Length: 192
Image 1: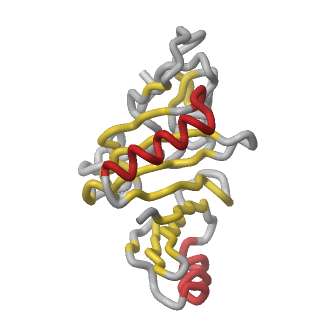
Image 2: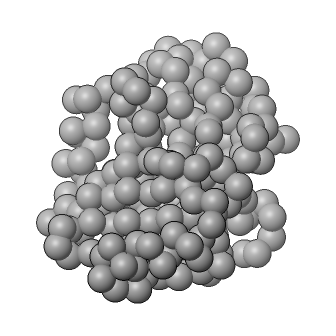
């Protein structure tokens, strides 16, 4: 059974943890120095917050799958919604978890993540505390859109949060893919 996912960027993690613990009637299921997550059953939601220097407010929305088959169905729905912005991200390390993911961007520019969690990772962006492996963002590494068009400009630029993205599509915050233009075919995890 799918679970709705919301990820918010916050400026004061401790204050937000107190607020959402009261709102959900329970402490976070996962708590880190820069991140907290509640797995609420009524309503069925995976609600996460992070304070990593990105924009404050809605970071992204999503659907969490309980199986690979369920994730496949979510990908089909994403493709039906907007094939041009669809990005696949298998084996992603992000938000203290390893997951297979798919991303799509809605008409308002909000990133939607479909994912199936495969396991935990020790740091925000992977198993290593090294800056490259645990970057401040979890954009799709070598993710591809399904557009057959060649990339107009795939050179990477660094955005405000220290993440890299193709010039045609700069990401705004942690854990969101570059806002893909139809012609963009790849994103890179790090600037060269």
